[in-house]
Each structure stands twice: as structure tokens, then as C-alpha cells.
Length: 98
Image 1 (cartoon, helix red, strand yellow):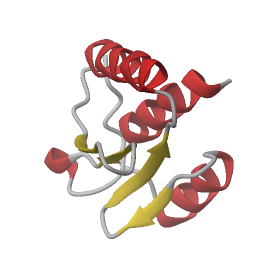
Image 2 (spheres, helix red, strand yellow):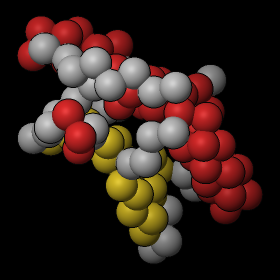
Image 3 (cartoon, helix red, strand yellow):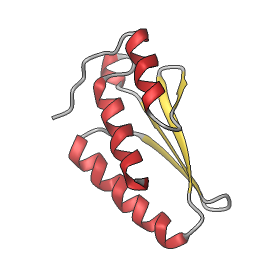
């Protein structure tokens, strides 16, 4: 179950310091994933779908085929900002590259 506990500004800064590649954009956190290999892109998209299902959290996703980038932005609309659910989604997406 997703944790929709709203984060304070201090908590957001602390979490972002530990989330490689994620940046704050207004009420969202976002990351652009660059993946050169098409097979790996497919595997990442499968991972992304699995994380969305597991966390029950639904980010905005933009896939640029020309630049081989996938941009993911997440926020918790019902809470009007960033929550633990957003951080958890970001962590799980970063796990793909470990």
C-alpha cells in the first residue's frame, strides 16, 4: 500500500540527496533516464510497469525515441505535493541500474 505521508521541505531535500539523478520540479520529482540499448529500454519499461503496479503509484512518463530517453515525473496529486510514495517509486526505478 502506498504511503501518502506528505514530506516536509527538509525531508524532500534529504531524500533528493540520496536519490541519484532525481531533481525537484515544482511539486514533482523527475528523472531523465538515458538508455542506449533498445533491449535494455524494453526491459526498463517492463520494470517501470512492474514498479507502478507494485506501488500503486502512477507517474507521468515521456518516452523520446529519438534521444532514447524516458522521463519520469511523480507527485501525489491527492496530497498536493511530494509524499513517501513518490520517493519509494523513485528508489525502485533506480534499482534497475544497480
